[in-house]
Structures are given as C-alpha cells and as structure tokens.
Length: 428
Image (cartoon, rainbow, N blue to C red; front, top):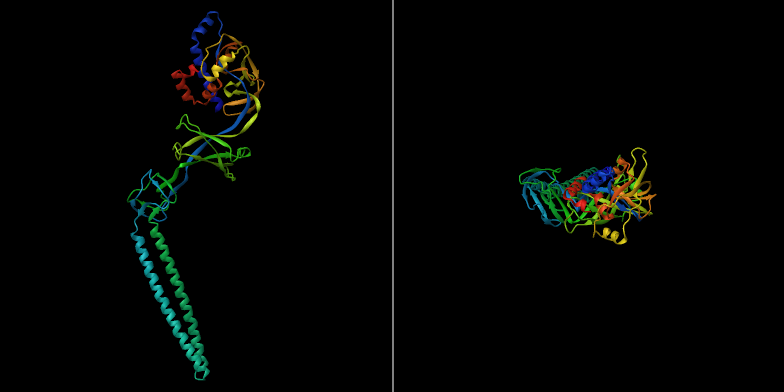
C-alpha cells in the first residue's frame, strides 16, 4: 500500500513539473528533443531509524463502564456528561420500594428466628434442670434408670433444637445483610476518580445488570492499545519510544514509550496487546479515538539512505534501482539554502541520468538504506516513469530538500491533491 501511494505521488508531481516547465518543454519540442523534468534529492549517509507503524485505540486511564448490579427503574440522575467526579460519588438512584419491603420482611424473619431460638434455649434449660433433679434422686435411689434415660434423650433433642434455631437465626441475619446490600445498590456510585461520559441512563427507564449506564475515566491520562504480531515481539519491548499522531490533531506529534506488553498471544490471531501510557493534560487524545503509532525499536547500520519514493522497479526486467543525475550538483551555499528552506531553485539545464541497480539493506517508513549508491548522489524521487517511458538519457532536475520529500511522502493522496491545487508543492 505504501509503494502504491508513493507511485501515486510521483505521477501527480510529474504532471505538475511538466506543467510548470511548459516553456522549457516547448523550446525542446522545437528541436524535436523531449527532456523530462524531475525532482531529485541528495542521498545521505547515516543510520536508518527502524520503526513499525501501527494503529492504536485511545482509552482514558482507569476507564470503566458502569453497570447496575440489580434490576429496577431509574428514579433520579445526579450527573451529566462531562462532570468531574470522585470515587464514591453517587451517579444515579434506582427505585428502592421493592428492596425496602424485602429488607423489612428479612428483618421480621430475623426477629421471628431469634424468638424461636430463645424458646429452644428455654426448653433446653428446662430439660437440663429436670435431668439434674432426677440425677439427685437417683443418687438416693428415689428415681429409676429409665426416667434418667428419657430425660437424656429429651436433652439431646432440645440441644439439637437450639442448634437448628441458631442456624436459622444466622440464615435470617445473612438475608438481612443481603437485602441491605441490595438496597445500597439502588444508589450507583463511581468506583474511580474521573470524568463522566457516554451517559445512557434516563429517568424512568428499566435497567438490569447488562445495561451500561455511564463510562468514567481520568482524561488527564490516556492509555493507547496497539496490537503486536508474534514477529514483532522479537524486537519490540517495553521502554521503546513511540510517536503518536492523528488526523484530528494535525501538526502535533505526541511522544511516549511502551509501558506494558501482554505475554499471551490471542488464539487464532497470533498477536498480543501492548499499552502506552500518555500524559493528556491538554486533552488532545479522546477515548475511542483511532491514532497512528510509530514504534521506534532501533537503528540500522551506517549506510547510504534514500527516500522510498526514489526506488524504481523496472517493469520489464524486474530490477530494482534508482535514477541518478550523474552530472548534477549544487554549490555548497546553494545546498545549505535549499536544506534550510531559504531558496527553491528552478529546473536545471539538461543533465545526464543513469539507472543504478541497488540492494536494499534496511527499510524504514519513509527511507531505505541501500548499497550501490554513494552518499551525495542526486537520486530522482519524482518523474522516474517519464525517464523510463521516453528512455531519456538526460533530465532537467528540480532539487528538493530532504525534509521536503519526507513531508511529501507522509501526505495522504487527498492531502497531496489539495497541496497541488494550492500550488504549495510547486513552491517546494
């Protein structure tokens, strides 16, 4: 996809260069010679940043969805979208009539079971007293052994009744606690500090345990989630620097680092999630936003670096290489002005061009490290298709700065069209 975009850019810029050099082409046509107009940049030497471009999803820190734990109609709502709240603050109240009635019934049942326990304890005490009197009489040979055995059996039964009554009391007390907890759940409170969003509650609506009422999260801190493939896990690790940007926040690049990587691969997807913690004091990142994340994980060996748009693949032979303007150069002061943006040289006189095969040593998002081209060579970045089509040995070069070609490569096709219509590309 990236190469298709760059090819699209090349065709558009080539058309622009042809239109901008109409007078020169007219003079060339007068002598039956067509010299293509191209853009070229000077190859550099250095280490190529290694990076992976991934898509990410933004979440607020401690972002949680709020669900009720009981089913009831909504009676009252205390917060609105955008409200700042603290942990424990009430968000809404559900109708509690049924739960209060259940609590009263549970409390009444507890009182009944406590009374029954007292009855059982009193009966036990009576049997224990009778047994003590019979034992005294038996010591004086005034009571039979059968009467004592009967009392002992009644004692065992009374003790069992007390244990049963105690268990019933504990059960009733547990029921009271359960109904108390259910009544407390009619007031839904925030579990975290943060900002309220995505309110889905309205007064009178019936909610249940699957009804999402609010989303709450700390907007001053954001968490971005990205997916890493099994292959990426061999070189991407926690602490790697990341650059975050989005079409919704143009001209801003947010930097951070990978905070956590899950060690478990998803079944079937063979990928895992990494999380990036980002300070969001300015509120640029909104929960749910899709962002582009560049993960920087190292640097290549020192090689000659050229823009990706300079790479040309011969459609006939399949050979990969670049077109080098062999007899073109700029004075040091002009080159310094070009890189600083102080000047924008026009098209040069016809100069020789040669196709040079290359080997790609390393590939980044916007540039590649190659062998076969020397640092300082002027490589054609726009217009290769014109050279190949006309089999032209010469071109007219418009030199561009490295920063300029990098910016052009990062433009989306629709943005590039807009730039061309506004004439900004021609100025570069």
